[in-house]
Length: 62
Image (cartoon, rainbow, N blue to C red; front, side, top):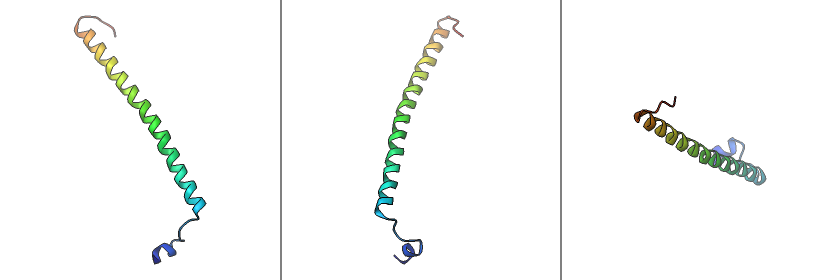
């Protein structure tokens, strides 16, 4: 416990609450961004697979 006092002690409760709210906001935004990223990656996989299959069937798309 002595090392905690040497580092400046526990921050005030409002500062701790504000820090936790910031962390929660970052996690919420990150979760939304990752959800969108997964959708984009899945769509890209489907698009490349379709182009590959069409190429194997003889259609020249690109």
